[in-house]
Image (cartoon, rainbow, N blue to C red):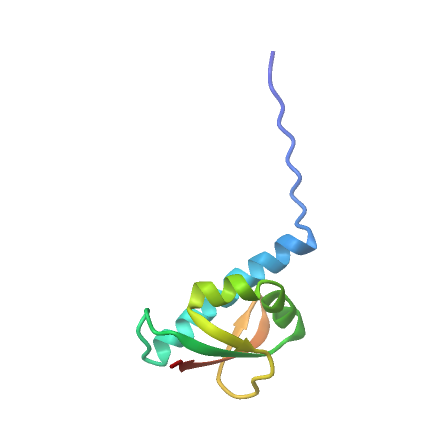
Length: 98
């Protein structure tokens, strides 16, 4: 009279990209802090680096902008703070907006 539970442990592409987007938000928040910005400051955000990271950021751009209080995001930033997300290089540029 036991019970069995089966779990599917595979992550599909959508879940992987969502996880990457969450890690990008964390990295952007660190870059904001390092730049001396207040948590309530609106920013313009630039991202560059690994294409897999940028695809995930583009697919979740509206959510990403809301989370980091960005007025807009560009995806061709060559200069900025370098970090790694999921073992891939990401360049983050944050500037106070307005």
